Each structure stands twice: as C-alpha cells, then as structure tokens.
Image (cartoon, rainbow, N blue to C red; front, top):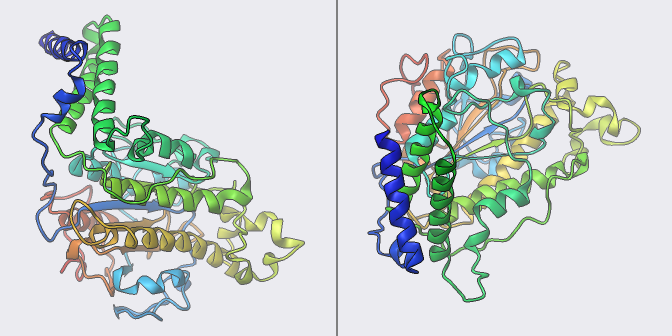
Length: 442
C-alpha cells in the first residue's frame, strides 16, 4: 500500500503546516504560472450545448453554404445568432449513422456524444480532461434536466462510464464555484487567497475521508479515485489561481420547477458559465437544456410567442403541443420556433462571453471559446442525416468562422476530431472518426 503511505505522508505534512498557522502562507509560496493547455492560435475554452429532439432540418439549414452575413439566418431557427454571424460555422450534411446514431432517443444517447463508442466517455468530458481547470475540469449545468425521463435519456457520460446528472439550480452552481470570487470576506482577504485556502481545506477533507476507510484489495478502485483527486488538488496548487477582475453576482433565481421560469433559469446558467470562464475556474462547460425525448417543459415563453402562431395565445398556449417532444414528430412551424428558442439562449451566452475579457489569454472570452451545439437526433422524426449542428465562437482563430460548410456525409466523430485539433490536442482520432471535414479549420 505505497500509495496510501505516500498520501498519509502528505496529510501529516499539510496538517503540521496548518497547526503552525502556515497553511495560507504555504500556498502563497508556490510558483504560480499560467498553464499552457494549447499552443498560440488554438482554441482555449470549450462549451458543448445539448438541445433535445432534433429540428426541422430544411428550415434549420435554410442558409446557403459559403461566406455568411448578418442576414444569412433570417429564415432559419438560427436567426437569433445573426448578430454573431462572423463567429458562426454552421455545418450541413453531417451524419450520425455509424457514429452512435439511432432512431431511438436513449439508444442515441449511448453513442452519439462519444463518437460512436457505446457507453464511453463523452466528448465534452474528454476535452475537459485534456484542458484541465482551476477548480473543475468540466462544469455541467442545465435547465430542467432534473425532470429527465430516466438516466438513459441523459446525453453525457463521465470517464467512469456513469451518466452525468446535470445541476439545474443556478444559485447552487454559483455558490459551489464562484461565491469566493466576490471579496466579501470581513478581513478583506483577496479572492486568490480564499481560493487557495479552499483548495487546501478540500485536500484535508479528502485525506480525512481516506483515513476513515479501511481499504482492502477489492477496494483498489476507490483508492485510485482518492489518489486521482489528490493529484488534481496538488496540480491545482502549482498553477495560477487568477480569478479575474470582472463583475460577478449570484443569480436571483434557483431551480423553481415552474415551467414559466425555465427561460430565466437558462439565462442564469449561461451567465454562470461566462462568469466561471472569466474567473478561470474552468476551461470547459457543458450546458444541457433538458433530457432527450423531453416532455417536461412547455416552451411557450414570451420571447417567442409572437412566432408561435395559434399556439402563442390562449387557449392553445398551454396545450401539450408546446412541449418539445410532442411537437417534434409533426416537424411543424411550432417545433421550428421551439428550436429557435434554444438558439436564442445560445445567442445570449455568446453575448455574455463577448462582454467579458479573457484574463488568461487576452481578448474576450468569445474570441477564445469554441461552442458546439447539437442534439441526439437529426430531424424531429428521429432521422440521423443532416442534423442541426453548428460551431460558434472565435476559437482562437483556429476555425473558419463566418462560413457555412457542407460536410458531404462525414460522420459526427470526424467533427469531434476536428474540434480536438482546433485545441491543438494532437489526438490521432476520436471514436469512429476517419479524418476531418473540409473547410472546418483555417
């Protein structure tokens, strides 16, 4: 049990430092320097956005390929993104078939997001593990994901093969990741010091938990998890804890469970992601609107009612047709409007990123972020061809934004691989990928 012995030695050392009143001072003596996760010119931050039930494909892809302009998306549910046209890279004619696609929602969730590898770690988690983070490698947040039909309808899987239950409460997300960014300490302790102190306290707690367990040979998996956590904290202390100098505020809404609040919750979560990026607590975030095959939330918000036709007013305003999955199989104008709402929220995420400086890499957060938006199926009737997918954000100049491209039937895994290359990760392939997509990278 050499691993355990080494851990206990570290624990005794830190405990001795803490008893001597040197814990915070000890942390401040580390040689903090920025972590070089990617070479210059590569994307630095990644956001993956999941929306359920696909789209009306002929409407979604009504834009033409080639150079974009502010009016390119006027007849598409991508219309809210028109103001960000120069940071957009929409993609036609990808396929999910052979890359995890399925005509069933839960079956698709087992492979689409991991490059066709059934039940494997999903792409967002793989990116997060590669890029690393100050407090978390991947920030998973959602909006009404807690009403998912079951675990099989969750799209994302961690590195242990377990489906990820996404946090829907914006206030709890803020409290767990961002509360100590605001200098509300009565002794006016700098937020960097508070964060170092919190990391060391977490390290102590982890070691205490380890000491309380009597581990035998069959519990090696648990022991290795502890070791991994301790290595993570140790690496964290050896890197910059820059928390930025922006404006951070606690969301004024939690997870209420009321349909009418879903838009406010989504907006609060988008702002949480932007604040976390500016504070540099993570470089990877995943946003999940709902679970696959969602039937929980009525998408009838005031922001889109003028586009909902007869369903934008009573008595049809609250009919079941205003639920995403119910309307998806009709591939109606109503369903088209509901997918527009998802993109409206992404547009507001881009607004938040564009308004905040990237303290670690320069420019704005949007300049250095690559956003991937996708669903588990293509069309509303479970088709796997030509899904509604786009990439957005400046991505550090690594991709050809301001253009719409035709993937020519390439698979979803090929796009994942291209994205990994945009981060300079040097992966040989990803999942079932067999090359890249023409026109994606510069």
